[in-house]
Image (cartoon, rainbow, N blue to C red; front, side):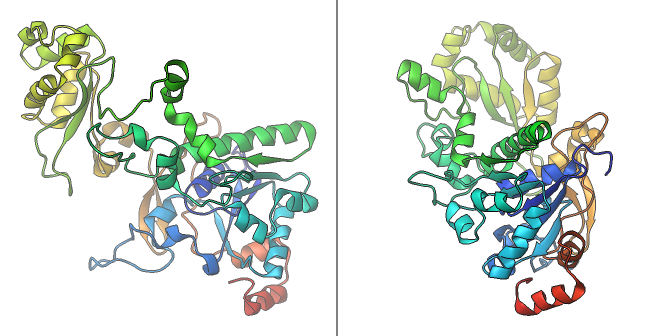
Length: 418
């Protein structure tokens, strides 16, 4: 741990759900000591959300510590139970912030104000604190107290309008994508920039990361298209304006694929050479010169027929065989993988050892997402599985906050430490 790049940095993690905790876990993987502040009075709902670990008899485990959802986002952290609805709880929060380098939260401004954790307040106890606030709509503005997660951000930011098929309602991306990738990534970059600034000047600062503004970044050309051309991009399914065929195509069923026997490949022909190579790979080189498909414009004009034709070729083959065949001919193609593929079948992911397996006291041995990047000299890793709720309350109170055993016992009895 001493050799990791963030060794010696302490994070007071007052976040919950996905975006905040994932940012905190990234910092932990590279050496920071992250203290996750929790309370049974306001439990992180991810602790009670499936998937749950299973018992040997096939039933699901119960309790606050068995959610794979929560555990995957909180490896390597310490957990203290602290009731922030009490005056003494807020005093202990200040004590933790005073002894930390980074303060992290994604609660709404209303909750932050209720707990007296505004930047103007916490910098009084620690002027060097880097305070990262990531509420959905920002600290100011007419919607500042609106509560939302990835499933809300996806439609609000325009992603859902671009996701799905034109003759069907918007469907989004099937997961809370902003929570897992965009917002935690931007938060970590901002924190690292602020850390560098503090190293140069000795000064901390406020980071405001409105998640709605962070997520708008992923719209690509949609906003520019409207700005320059007055055109509103909308759903186009899997098609692309400058490529054909471009989409997901059904392959032969694979009943070894758990709960998901239907198999697919994604194909993207962006050049005439790739189109001709695809036809040759499937044994029908003459189709490349068919007037309906001989040019990109012709293929786009007859896209339904084109997709039906390609689908008839892929449907008779295993997805992995199609991928290898087309890749060998220089055609971009990949299997549409599921979780089983990523954990067990993908030879590249397995060879690189991306998933880290950790032993958790209640869920047993489980796979955790590995660090987001690999540093050649200081590679990050998860030092421990996700903490049990309040597992480190005593340690944090005595080692970090400097409380005596008697003081900790009194605070437990008073319900300040829950």
